[in-house]
Image (cartoon, rainbow, N blue to C red; front, side):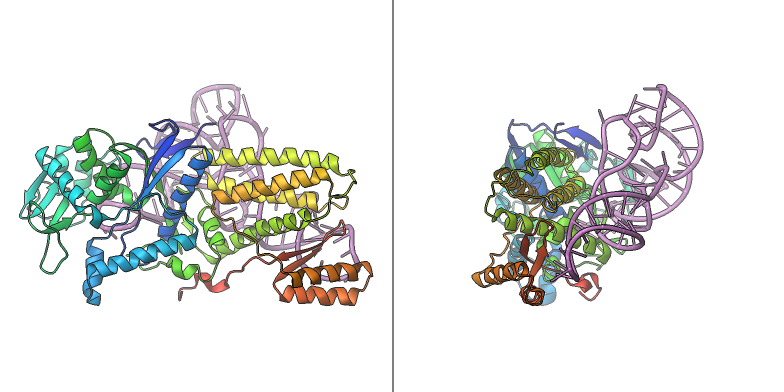
Length: 487
RNA sequence: GGCGGCAUCGCCAAACGGUAAGGCUAGGGUCUGCAAAACCCUCAUCCUCGGUUCGACUCCGAGUGCCGCCUCCA
């Protein structure tokens, strides 16, 4: 099956065909930096980070751009409230964004352009819109004239009449049409501003994304992504102000992720029911958070609650445990006993089938829920093999298990949940050896004592049916109160 | 009021139109010096009603319910 994505433009799944064969240009909406980002924001970031990894896994050369909107009403409001400069607020939360994103396990985008570093380009684009009669100046403000762009509404599937009927906001009577939106805002006293042909001011909300995406990816690129709440007005307007000038669609595929919910409601800044990622990561490993965010299809709603998190936590521990067992077993000396090799051959076939299913899920509109399910199944496949009473570590098992381990790690990498397992130091290794000795001597008292010592040191001790003794570093746990209101 | 999305086991969540993955939980059992772990078994006919089809969870229509967007929002 070929790669498919659900395109907001057509409202259906489409085969993915990049404009330039072998290359994919992706623009994902980043944050407005006026606060730490929350788990709902993180969902979008993780989804599009995963999209990028999947595209690369598919062999594409990916250029991934994620903007930072660092000039905006919300930033100015916060700065005013705290009596500081807007740029200080923006700088602080830009730095926090980068830190938290790295902590989350996202790879940095290839380019993270900031709005304030593209003012000349923004002004130039606004001028083009004025020249082409798509925008008009009004007392230092510049507005985009939605009626001047016939395709207005194509991204969100709305039309101007319907939008006007449903308008819930008081309109500025100076505008030609209630839906006209600001490209450039005249500065009020004390606000940060830049010189422009229309007087001092600053960019409107949508223009920076149009200008920066086209600057780095070209006038028409492959994928534009973001949360579904950005479809209207943000992406609609982005497209309008771009396509009005270029005559080309800004992006070929528009992908939008569903909302994260909490207590059945959308998690959002305005509702005040959000948890910032910075805090969440202090109580659970990033792997658990990522696995949770990817446990539903990206377009489905997903509820952030303790039960769901706990189930994911257990699932992650199983993946970890499997990797731990593999590491232990692969350290065994290879034996000449090949009596188990028939089972090993069947096992290897199963591994290949599992990988095929994994990729099929990802190809099908980034079905991470299915792919995550396949990881669990695959881990199970491995554990089942290792648990056989008749298990023998021959050259064949070594080869198959080495391959399986690489495969499992590669699968984890797609979701950014890979992590190096701590090395067991000499002391732990010695305890493990002593315990094996004790068990061979049937010195159960000593054996039990050593297990307790190892467990206290943070290791899982497992005696396998085949007689092997495994000592695995315990996975990091989460704190139960992770979803409590107080956090 | 307009537009859009979703509706699968107690919970989460998949499934080219051919007769329901997986995880969590629960119950039963096996293995084990103990413990942990593991292994085996059991547990849904897919919101309702129509239609298309040899055949539909999977397509179409209507209804019901939930969510979102129409204002800043990932």
